[in-house]
Image (tube, helix red, strand yellow):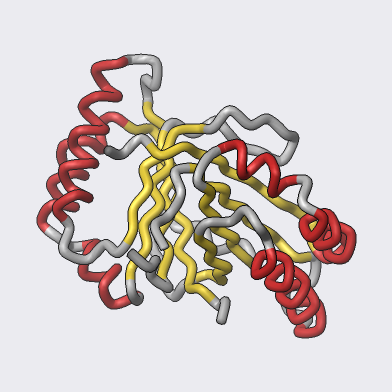
Length: 107
Length: 107
């Protein structure tokens, strides 16, 4: 499926990234949500790759990389029931979240 | 085209993001490179979207979001001639770069 023009990228730092139970709970809660979202175009849930250069930040626990056809569909995703449920279930597991939203300018 | 399992995300902060000439030079140099890379699977070159919540970082100038089929192809991209030319042409334009590499864990 062609990726959407709106990219929503979220980095999560779990409080206890070494705790397998926390990781499993987070992954289950998030994947259930994104596999059932009506609005997501393409999705990637990643963990730091085995790359190592000075400019690379691999301190995060998970990277969620979603694309949407446009900003309006991303706005709907923000208030989707599954999204709110995921936050309710999982926000206790993370200590920090950083989001980067961007609109594609490539022709 | 299906996105690859390896995501390479780069945030660029230009020294003079308000200078249209710098932006045009950067965009031309980068898009020439990524439109001709042998190894990229999917690509997105974005600028900050019109979203505004506390967790959103919109301080960057450009977000480059690439996927590759696997880490080996991303390694080849790192030393591709066009990549080295882009860095040579454009690194003077940015003051900061942060990279996040991640491997997909979604089934």
